[in-house]
Length: 71
Image (spheres, rainbow, N blue to C red):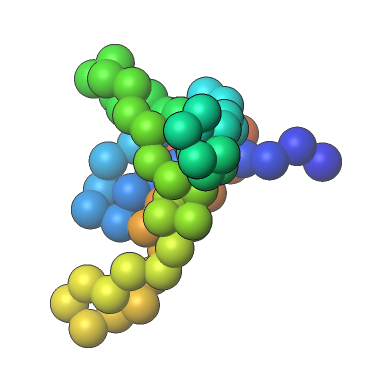
C-alpha cells in the first residue's frame, strides 16, 4: 500500500506531497510538498507529521487524504 500523497493542513490548505528528501547540511529528513497555488515548500519530516494544538484541540499538522485529495 502506498503512502497518501495529498494532505490537508490543520488551517485548511490542501497540499500534495512530492518527495521525502534529506537536507545536505545535517542529514535531516525533510518533506517537499506543493500547495494549490503552485508554491513548493520544505519542512522537516518531524514537523510535517507532528501534532499541533489549535483552539484547545490536538490534531495533526497535516492530515492524510485519500488518493483523490478529498476528505
